[in-house]
Amino acid sequence: MYPRPIPRPVLTPADQASAAAKARFWNRVARKYAADPIADVAGYEATLQRVQALLSPEHSVLEIGCGTGTTALKLAASTRRMLATDISAKMIAIAREKLASLSQPLPQLRFGLADAETTASGGVCHDAVLAFNVLHLVSDLDQAIQAILSTLKPGGLFISKTPCLAEMNPLIPRLLVPLMRALGKAPDVLVFDAAQLQSALERRGFVIEAVERHGTKRKDIRVFIVARRPR
Ligand SMILES: C[S@@+](CC[C@H](N)C(=O)[O-])C[C@H]1O[C@@H](n2cnc3c(N)ncnc32)[C@H](O)[C@@H]1O
Image 1 (cartoon, helix red, strand yellow):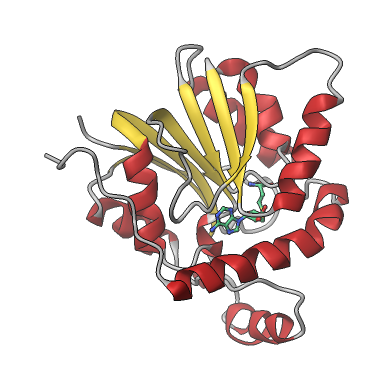
Image 2: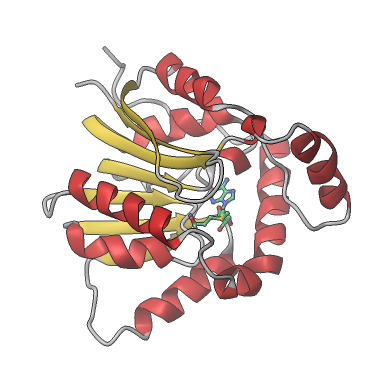
C-alpha cells in the first residue's frame, strides 16, 4: 500500500528554471496553437467518447497540460467538477476566454495555472486525472507520474494520450527536433515508446487497464492509456 498522502515532488532551482522556460515557450506559441485545426478529427472524437465513457457525473477531474481548454470544454459536462491546468498563462487566458464566451454556462469547469510536475492539483484529490499530449513535454517523467499519483484518490483513474516519439523515424526526435529547439521552434521533449511509458507508470504503482490507439490516419504514435491507482 502507499503511504498517504503521497509526497509531491519538491522543486529544485533547476526545476524552476526549466518550468519558466517551458512557460515562455508555450506562451509564445499559444495563439497559433489555438488557431491550429485538430489534425485527426475522427481520432480525437474516438478519444473523447472513450474518456466520456470512463468519467461519471460524480467525478472530480483534473486535467494537466490542458492547453487552450478545447478538451476540458467538451468533457466538463460529464463530471461533477473539473479543474483544467496548464503551465502557460497565455494558454489559460485563451481557455478562460473560450469558457466565458460559451452560450451555455459550464459551472463545473475552472481553469488554473499549474506545473504538472509539482502542484497540479491545488491540494485536492481527484477521481480522475487526464493528460493529453503532455507527458512527452515534462522534464522528468517519473516526477510527473508521482505528482499525478499524489493528486489521485485511491482507486482513481489516470487517462492519457501521449505522443511516443521513439516510435517515429529516429531522425525526427534525434535531429529535427533538436534543430527546431535550437531555433526556438520546438519545446524540450522526452523520447520514449509506449512500453517505456507503461513501465514508468507501473514502476510508480499504477495498474494498466487499457492501452489503445485511436488514430485514423497513417501510423498513430499517440498511445492512449488508462491506468488505475490501487486502493
Ligand atoms: C501540445 S500542447 C497539448 C494541449 C492539450 N492538452 C491538447 O491536447 O490540445 C501541450 C500543453 O502542455 C503544457 N505543458 C507543457 N509542460 C507542462 C507542465 N510541466 N505542466 C503543465 N503544463 C505543461 C503546454 O503549456 C501546452 O499547453
